Every structure is written in C-alpha cells, then in structure tokens.
Image 1 (cartoon, helix red, strand yellow):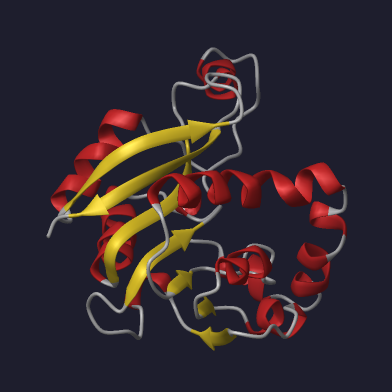
Image 2: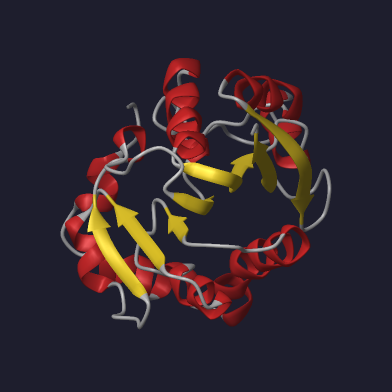
Length: 207
C-alpha cells in the first residue's frame, strides 16, 4: 500500500500525534463528534473496529457506546502512546490486510487514512478490507475533491503537497469504489460543505 507509514512509525510519532498534533480541544473533538453523529443516526449493535487507530484519539470516544472496541494500527510508536481503556484492545496490523474474519464487527471506523492512498488500486483494496470485516456499517473519512482547498490547488492558488502528499477524490468516484466492494454510501457529512476537505461517509454493507 502506498501510504507514508514511515512517518507514523518514526521515533516520537506517537508522542507528536498524542500531543501537539491535536492540542486544541476543537481539533481534538472535531472528528470524534462527527463520527458520533453518524453512529447515533445509524446505530451501534455490536463490536466496533477503529482502523487505523493512531494513538487512540477516536477509540476513547467509541468505547462510550458500550460495546467492545478493537483498535488497530501498523505503528508500534502510535500504539505505545495510546491510552489503556476498559473494553478496548489494541492490535498491530495493516488496514489493507486486516487480521480478522469476514463480518467480524458491526461497525468499522477509519479516520484520516484514505486520503494518504495515491493509487486507485490501493484505495480500492483498503475500502474492500474495511467493508469485508464489517457486518453492517463503515464510517470513514476522505478528502473531497470538490472542496475549496482542492479547487485552490487545481487553480494554482494553493501549493500542492507533492508526490507523497495527501490525495482527494470525488464523491462519485468514492461511491463507485464502495459499490464495487459490496456496499453503498448512505450519506456524507462534513463540517462545512465545499470549505472542509475532510469529509466523512457512512456506508452500509449489502446483506
């Protein structure tokens, strides 16, 4: 998978993401609150997978739903910085090769990961794995190509991140990839449509 795993696995990466990366309360709570809104709308009926979990920023919110939570990440540095939580277990592994059987979780959550995947094949493989281990619902985030920041990049008003930078995708293209993996997008949710490139979607696996 073409994701910059070296950035997350380097010495001090866990401390950085657990500390200054989301130091302000607004930054720390923005993603968890959006995920919570989607889970409240679509319900939680069984165990949850948080993949990749990073330093457990979302995991601490997910355990509040009262079901077992499995948190997975490829980085030992990230996992070492994650808090120990009741009703949560932390596992080392890759999103594109999840070490779980089909339909192992009622809900699968994946935050701030998909936009690191550059090739369509890598993105499709990650989505297929997330959907494979879900029995019902996938909640994940991506960068929306229709957002204002991405329009500024395309028009040259904003500098692109380069060949190893994060990538945006259109909502239509994302929906097609999700459908190819046997699910359908139920809804999108973002802080401010067109202005926020970080966008979440909820997808339901076909029965």
